[in-house]
Figure 1 (tube, helix red, strand yellow):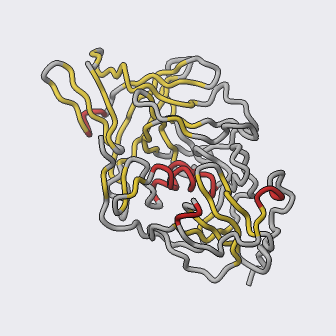
Figure 2 (cartoon, rainbow, N blue to C red; figure 1 turned 180 degrees about the vertical axis):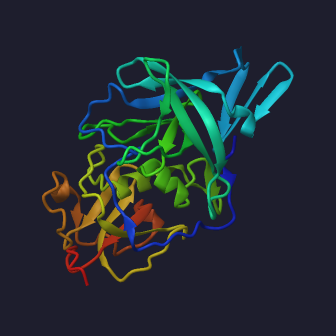
Length: 295
């Protein structure tokens, strides 16, 4: 299926966006994934004791059928999937309710997702730092949640598995900032831009899944497509692609202690703003030499 398109860039308040550590709405405290839901199987999908013949995801909308009965949209309320945990075990997952995301993201559907715990009680699958339930949006494919290792933070396309991206995490943020991984913009597929965004917003400079930011750091980011534009006169920091920071501006030493800083430092980083260099996104930091003076 060809990537879908959308006609206009998504508008957000750029220049004051908060950086954060989490890839998918929660802090994993290292690489312990044993009880973390790393993916969800599209099939089997069950409702009311009946198993659908097939189910699939297009954008953030689920579709399916059983015999001659077609399921789509709100028909998936009450549908149960199988969630996969990091230790290889599984857990029942269901859609409790759904609604369109607020403008300007009305083409995205948000879901209240629950899992059934060992005692048989349905619990929210996504929670914020305060323990309150938050919604999620489904994204085709799976991500590697390991940190500080080769492959950490990377995406694997899998037509039979998807990820419920909890609001507040990088996967959901980048989608709502306009980088729809299933779509294209002016003929350019956005999947790689979404992945580059997840690296950038988590400050995963080295492309290993390891975040090198403190939650609340401010960033100004923009891309070559014009979905997000440069709105601040801040200090240039890095160019980004799907593998992290493809280069870091040598004179911005905010993160000079990075293990990959020396290999990625480049005095010309950000000075040749063209697609031929392979950069998908760029970011700036406030203050002088990357230090926010609170001005």
